[in-house]
Image 1 (cartoon, rainbow, N blue to C red):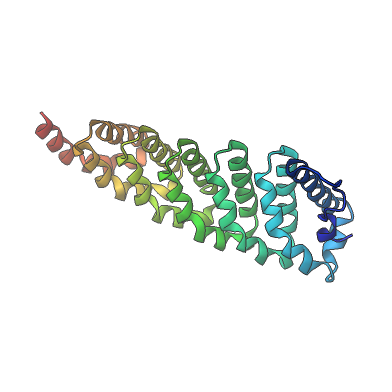
Image 2: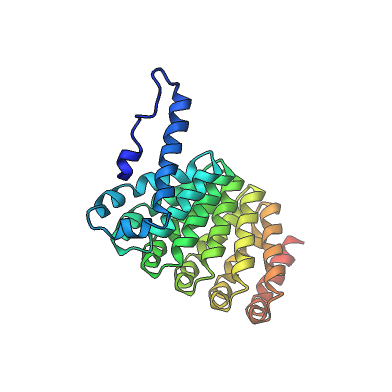
Length: 264
């Protein structure tokens, strides 16, 4: 049976409620995915006759990542990972990446985690890395989201992706945007920026760029908002724990002293 046929409403009783319809539909989709993930799935996806239909179903697989049922979300994640191994399905999955990133903005923690897990899993496949690289600025923008939990999801995903060397140049280019949240009037926004900088500073590839951004961090010490000044102070104190960053911080000391004089 084809994937599309597995999603028909033939199993609905007459007069079924919308919630029941959704439940049955989800179960039907999950059943179809479980078939894909069975021992016969590889053989099915190898068949050229089924590949266009399976590729067209990729957006429906992504939809599963926002389902209320954790088993359905996991099935969606597993299905994406399995399909991503086949070159025939990779363009459709690449086209779905913006939708996967949007999952990081959901109110539901489990949906955000499903989106983050899917992105990290796909990043293990070299074919998806150029497309994921192109989406990194969008992930950085999430650090300025109104919802703290969303910002945390963006920060966590960014740090997780930074473990892959191929993403580091683009993330490094985006570091000035990571500093912007430190100026925000919301403490949690500032903390998101602080946490990302602290985590990235643990990787040698980011330290030269972080060193270049230190003047902007020092400038936070003269901000008219005391909370922003405190954020700058905390970031500098944290970064000073890294030996490689100390020369750049030492170079900025005259400016820091000058700012402190004016404050007094």
